[in-house]
Image 1 (cartoon, rainbow, N blue to C red):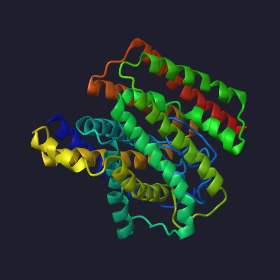
Image 2: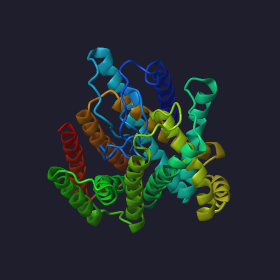
Image 3: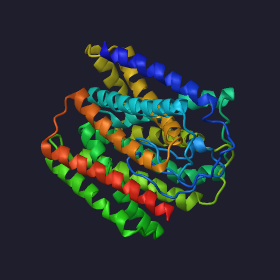
Image 4: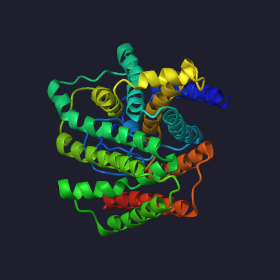
Length: 390
């Protein structure tokens, strides 16, 4: 009963979010800005990564792959007023709700079926059912890409695939809370790759904020009751893929105009389609077609009906794509500091929600470690913002 109620609530809110975006979020406005970043997970923050030109301010905080969105150039503060405040609050609430829903549906599906590659593929492919109708009906302008454009995007799509599949495997191999604690360490990987591959050296205060992140994740890992090396390695794969995606975006797309109509939402949509094509053969190589008999066996055992299990898988994919879409709206309306705080609160909310939903015990050491790591991530975000203003 709870599952059905939550399912209806998520569906209604998804419709509401989709309707709200049609009014102003995806239409060019006079306040257009040039996006200069493309990056991944919501836990980490700012990187100067050019994508394409003339993206509107509502989508100028770039996009996320596995868990949220990241900021680009600091957006100008939007005018105040009660309506504006309520709108921003609504976007943040939907962003958090869809993210919580995704983590819960994803973990439930993984608990029922130990086929993370197949589940990751289904979740990635579900987004196609959202943006393709928008393109076909003209509600959103379809991107126009040449073969050379697709070749440019392919390495980024590979990293995009790694971000998602790494996160899904980590969620299946361990607790949701632990996966998100490890993923909070993405700034460490980002700084390392930027230094090694781009020669980017950041100010000392930025590097100093990495110490609590590293220490917090180490403490949480040692004290984690449900610790597995697979969960740790997979979450780090997601972090490395996200950081590499950012570096590749900067190296390959800097100063380039990639195709036509490739705003932030369409870029995310194109990467989703490409990642789906990448995941299908990889999934067949890793898991074969074992997912389908496992599905039938689970239904035959009476644990699920075909409809309820299919709905669970579909909701995982729908909420995965929806929270990224709504993240554009939420983050495009606020300044960088609010963005950093919002990302930090979101991670805390997900960890708490997963502990409550799955009754996952957390040791005192794990709680202390996760708190230190998450606060370190917030300090990293604020330090990066301060650096960009100089």
